[in-house]
Amino acid sequence: QITLEESGPTLVKPTETLTLTCTFSGISLSTSGVGAAWIRQPPGKALEWLTLIYWNEDKRYTPSLKTRLTIVRDTSKNQVVLTMTNMDPVDTATYYCAHLKHFTRAFDVWGQGTLVTVSS
Amino acid sequence: SYVVTQPPSVSVAPGQTARITCGGNHIGTKSVHWYRQEPGQAPVLVIFNDSDRPSGIPERFSGSNSGNTATLTISRVEAGDEADYYCQVWDVDSDRAVFGGGTQLTVL
Image 1 (tube, chains in turn blue, green):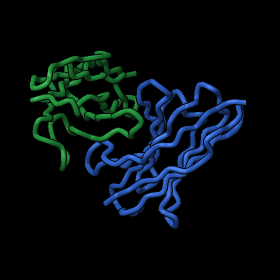
Image 2 (tube, one colour):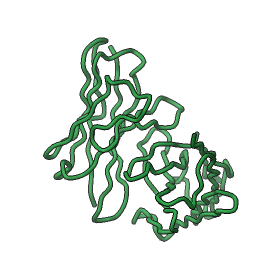
Image 3 (tube, chains in turn brown, green):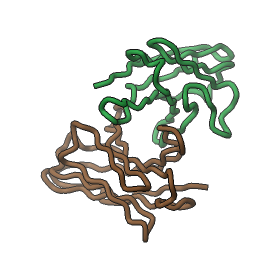
């Protein structure tokens, strides 16, 4: 059984850099075919996909935020780390990490999400 | 960039059939995935690759995809089916996942 758990700050100030960690259990991030994504959801709004990293470290970013996002994996800790620079109040959202279902582009396991508020 | 469109809300009486649509240009050529999200909870995958159900999802949930519209169908709707439902595709041109705006299902 795959489980994911997000961790990181709940409050960041404008212009600061956000760093979120997703810890995977039940599957190794270095296993062929594994993918891990970050998806966010502003309060009362729709889901927005941010980025994805594959087992081979291939990465994808949403074009509108590409210059602000970085995704990396730490296989020794079985974690995926999201960094988002220059945070703004409009980035206030619940941030989810999700597992990419093998051989599909669907997200079959999600973390519980972490609400990040951007405010001075 | 690719856009998928969902109706903001759908209402249905208990025991009836709910149909939630997801529109996009030639969406029938893409694989569509559907998620259910209850308030304060993480999304749950209910349909992948247009019409496949993950284990544990009731047979009442089904999906179809053709032309410019994909549809999530929920048969014999129950009060517990009330939730927001999102469709998602992968846009090959921009190489990114795209979510619809979500549909709130209300059971009357």
